[in-house]
Length: 235
Image (cartoon, rainbow, N blue to C red; front, top):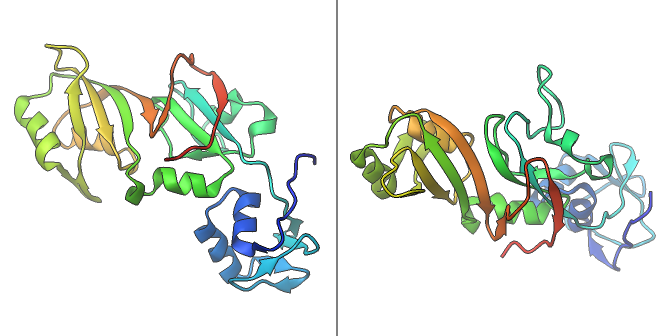
């Protein structure tokens, strides 16, 4: 394979693993602790430094640093954000060339949702974009099956809605004046189906959920199914 980047002397092992596998350094440390990493045939230890002359194996495969890459994808409804199809449902990887299939989604959208998906091989970038401590704002256009009652709007905006996995706090504003079906939803969290579950807890069904922005990244004029490369700038 071409495009590998050389190891800078010296480099911490967990950073090398993160750059090679597209995982966070925390995950890299877990792989080291679990004994899944070998350096020159020996089980690796935390804190180790490596050089260009070292050979690092994971699951018997030699690791190499891959160039960092970020792709923005406009996900249509009906696609899964996973590598494996389920019940014949297509995945987002069917929208991408095979040369990009090593990239991993940064967060997810469920099958019935559309909009902006980020894919990268930079685990540290993915961690900064998804961990709650970094407060990366996401923006969605949501259409409800019935008008949102003023009391429920106040509950969501001011107090949050209690879900089994904790309170859900969203910021709401109308998409259009006088239309209480269609809302702009902003949130910095990203729990599984959080927006759908928040409205369901108050008796609403979401008919359409479309993400337009994730941190400082936006769909812009991309059409459904289109993708483009972008710069890795999480801040």
